Length: 368
Image 1 (cartoon, helix red, strand yellow):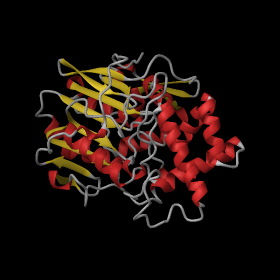
Image 2: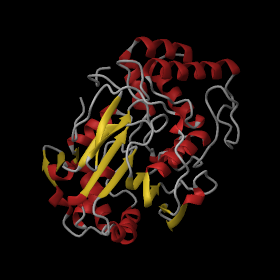
Image 3: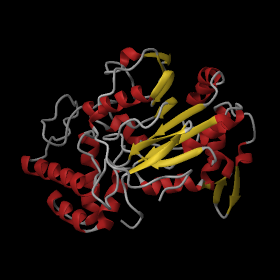
């Protein structure tokens, strides 16, 4: 694809003096892009149940109140299943366990944009036209985020999580499904103001290479700075927000220091295993796009990736209630969906992903 270069496989991420492997893209075919979570869309999040169940492929959809395949003929549903299977086999992106209601909307959007009438025709196009697959991926991974989005969440982090982080010799934070990175910069600013940034390491992962490049650049529209300034102030910011960026030609370039302790890398929540141990994991408004099985797998991955008494932060429409890890966590803030691990996770069973031989490395803030 045009936005990619090099090979796809695993990177080696430095972790507290040691090197540990992280499988990227579920080891897709050589030259194929990786898979991973779909970033949150604010409008969809407001209309979807947090754990809508169902599988696109191989099984009958159950438990989803909105009947996502109502009005879809058996043939059209089969075409959708084959399209998703073909994308997974050829490119390595795995959307087969995403919530079907969201998938259907996005695939229909791509059909209209391509001027096609059937999912079989779309399958043929994306398999033989890398640009068409690139466009489909953008539709499947809409990146809607913002700095200090939900300011009360960041205020709760300052008041309830930061005091405990101060007792640690080092702090490791994982932003899973970071989209274009605004939340990562917000966390870097928060840690800087709380005197923790020097001993912190932030890992920002997503499936979308284009979004990661934007995050890595630290350049965001100047038009959003007024909104972000308001969010920052409501989140308990202690300085002038404009101190953190330089405005130029309609853009805001955030200072390089905020990226010094950040590593951006592609990672697939659907197939990859744990790659380190973290004190804090943030995955806000991502699980709403997964079916019940994939949500359970992802929560198991987070449980295995947290240090003892580590913190898990979810979106407001997401919860650990009635999940496979509920008994391992206590609610630190019920409204803001901040949880603290209270017991050890069960022994890891591989999360369904198999390790593949390393084929690439990612240095600090770079990938080749």
